[in-house]
Image (tube, rainbow, N blue to C red; front, side, top):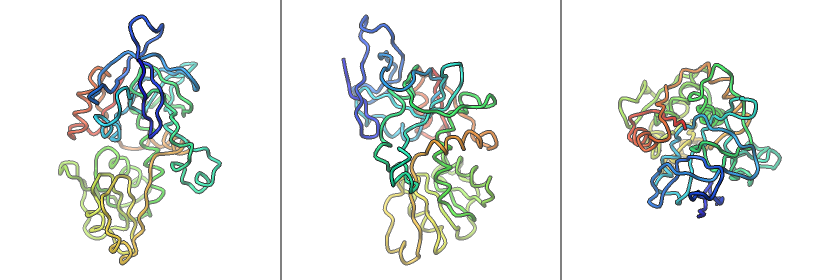
Length: 306
């Protein structure tokens, strides 16, 4: 049978395996009719790109949000480490702009018309996928840690919009920790708060120059902490921002989403130098357990392996 797999608004056909129908099958974590994930056999993906073997895939917060929401047949996962021809290990690129249009040249690659096109098919929680781009990993970066390259690249792109100085991170989960590591490495004074008290870091002792919102609904905390004339970076849906406070205090509010191939390469070089959280590594067969751990805040980062 057939279903449509959704990739950021685009529907891509996915063939489900029926016994005896296909010569080559792959195991994947597939969303079922109720929206919940489970292991299933699907046809090995064909089409453009290179067929690569998945070694590990990180569970992103955006994956957690899609479970129970995205259509039947969806295969999630985009923080992928894979093996390509010649035994080389790579981190796969998740979406890419054309690099030539006005939006790309202006630094808004994630708004490029080409950007939503899938680059990892059917999704990273499969034994093998079709991929159209990657960056190679050094030998010293293991498979599980290598899945951090894609989210770190997203953080690096966002950090470029954060002025140097005293910075508060709202939401000190995995992404918040990556922001903290990147900003501290460049010399900023970093503070962090979280709805889970045990995750909070040093709280600010006065106004901050910038706030990075990494958790939904962090608008009130951000506005209460930022200095007049300061900057608020939205890396998550902060909720309603009162425009009166923005214009009266002359705040700069900017957004950042996803990464670029250049930031992926930068992340590969920087990752070994940063102090980052250890992942909780589980097999695909224990996906639901990993999903629960990350959703409930019991694990900062879950990485799944075939």
